[in-house]
Length: 559
Image 1 (cartoon, one colour):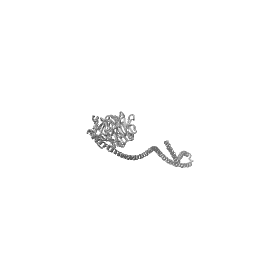
Image 2 (spheres, rainbow, N blue to C red; image 1 turned 180 degrees about the vertical axis):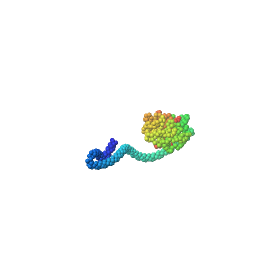
Image 3 (cartoon, helix red, strand yellow; image 1 turned 90 degrees about the horizontal axis):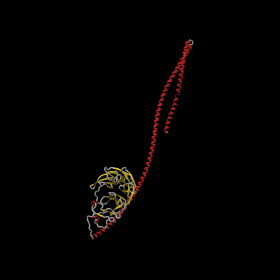
Image 4 (cartoon, helix red, strand yellow; image 1 turned 120 degrees about the vertical axis):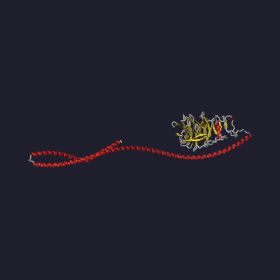
C-alpha cells in the first residue's frame, strides 16, 4: 500500500511540474507567437497587394499604350506605385528579419525544451533509483529494528539470568561461610571428643594390661606346678569350626604357647596360608580374624587365624596426593592406581616390584574408583567431577566421558558383556550406561549415597551410606532385596564364581554372604578391635581371594 501511494505521488508531482512549465513558458512566448501570426497575415496581404498592383501595372501600361493623353496621370501613379513598392519591400524585409529572429528564437527554445526534457528524464531516473534505495533502506531499517528488539530481549534475559546467578552465588557464598563455621565447630568438637575417647581408651588399656599381667602371673604359677608341652614352631592356630557357640574364639585363659588342634594337625597347610606365613614372618598375631559369636550361620570350610601384615614388600611414591583406589588388571601384570592428583597411573609388576608404565589423564578431579574390563583392553575410572571416563590400554587415550550425575561418582564397574557400565554416585542414584551409543539407559534412585558396586550377569549389588546392601535387577530396574548391616557399607567384592559376596562396613566387620541363599555365612572381626563410633578409624576395603579356603584381606582407612 505504501509503495502504491508513493508511485501515485511522484506521478502527480511530475504532472504538476509540467503544467507549471506550460503556464510559465506560454506566457513568455505568447506575444511572440501573436506577432509572428500578424507578420504572416501581413505577408499574405502583401502578396495579394503585390499581385493586384502587378495587374494594375499591366492595365496601366495597356492604358498608356492605348491612351497617350493620360501620360501625366500615369507618371504620378507610377511614382506613387514605386513609393508604395519601396515601402512594401522595406516592410517585407523587416518582416523577414523578424521572422528569422523568431525562427532562431524558436530553435533555441526547442533546444532548451529538449535539454529540459532530458534533464527531467534524468531526474526521473534518479528519483526512481532513489525511491528504490529508500525502499531498500526502509527494509533494512525494519530488519535492524527487529534485530534490535531481539537483542534487547536477549540482553534483558541475560541480565535477568545474571541477576539470578548473582543472587544464587551470594546465597551459596553465605551457605559456604555458614558451612565452614559449622565445619570448624564440628572439627573442634570432634577433636575434643577424640581426646576424651583417647583418654578413656588409654585408661581401659591400662586396666586391661594390669588384668592381663595378673592373669599371666597366675597362669605362670599354675604352669610351674603342672608343666605343659610347648612346640617352638607353632605360630598359627587353625580353629575347627563346627557351628557350635563360641567354637572359633580364642580363649583368654590359654598360655602363651599355641597348640594345634587335633583335627587340623593331621591336615596339610593351605598354599595361601603358607605364602602369608612366609611373607609376614612367624611372630604371634596381635589382631586376628575369627567368627563372631553373634552370628548363628554355619560356616563352610575352615577359617584360619593369621597375623596382620606389618612388613611392606615394596613401597613407592605413586601420586602427588592421597591414593584412593588400587586395582590389578585381569592378567595381574599391570597395577592401576588412582589418586587426588586427577591421574590414573599404570605400574608393571616385575619381580615383586612396580615399575611406572604410563599415566592416564583427562579427569578434572580426584579419581575415586578404577575397573578393568574382562579383556584388560579398557580401563574405567570414576572421579569427583561428577563423571566417569574410559581409556584404552593400548594407546592410553581417553575414549568416552560419561556425564549426568549431580554428585561425586564414587564407584563405576563394567558389566560382564563389557558393552555397558553401571555407576553409583553421592547423589543417591545409580546409572546404567550403553557404551555403543554413549548414553544413559536407566537411572535408579537408591535413596542413599552409593559407596561401591559389584555386578553379576543380571544383578547389580550396591553398598550404601545407610548401612544397606541393595540387590538390583538390571532388566526391571527395581530392588530385588535389601540387607541391612550394622555399619555403613564401604566396600563390596565377589568371589571367583560370583556365588559369594564379601561386605566391609564401618563397624570393623567383614561378612561373607551366600548369594544363592541370601544368608550370611561367615562374619569376621578383629579379636581386640573395639569400635568407638563412626568417626574412629575402621576397615574401608575388603577383597575375596580365591584359594583352597576362604580368606579375607582388608586395608585400614588410616593406611
